[in-house]
Length: 291
Image (cartoon, rainbow, N blue to C red; front, side, top):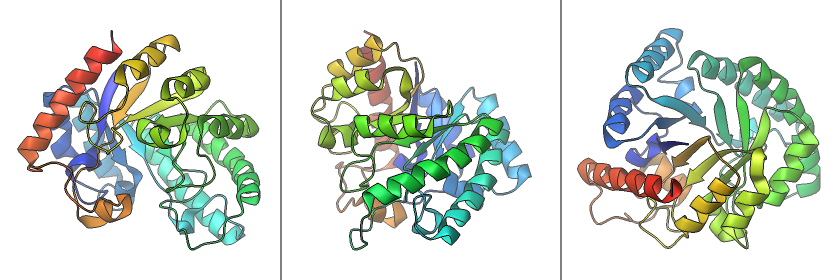
């Protein structure tokens, strides 16, 4: 198993100077840095920047994974065909860039949009039908690029289509592609699942990616989630892929607004303090998960 962390832990915006954070996560004891696809439309839009980023990751022995929450204008489940085509154009541009970066996992609520706008009408049945149909199209491109698409199961406050592992499994079975699998997140599971370990076991071999975070969105070990149980469930299904911490502990910026972090969750959010917490968390998780 490999252990990673989402770059957004340290920043207020989704895009950042990833070449700065790659050696940092190596130094802190991580194997993986997860980046946002948002950066691939601005700071890392050119082939030259992508080559530099890939080389930096290779030089430090760090694997890259990617996450993304599509905007309302990139919604594969939309009833408006123009919105769906805009989403297809976006992903058709992003997936080859992931291939250039040797990224093989893209996770998130890719089947819909994020964050949820509760003022909009909900047509769950119709949206699921459209999402399955359009994800089949996207899966063909993902297969060509060697990227597995992780359908992240989100809590009811951030999404309405896939709230439980069971719903995620039903969705990927309807899509029926080897490159479309389930992605789980302990923060979301703590809200929606009856038992986190049971949900992981239910996902089994269909689990392609796992986000780790406490019930309060802090790093693992700083809250109340049953990490021993989570680790045992991962061992039970012989999970050997990537686990990525996705803590959000700071107010401010686009990230703070979208994640709804209205207060700093740590008494000290200096970079040095965040580094110490991240190092402690990866050591904690390795110890618990590896038994």
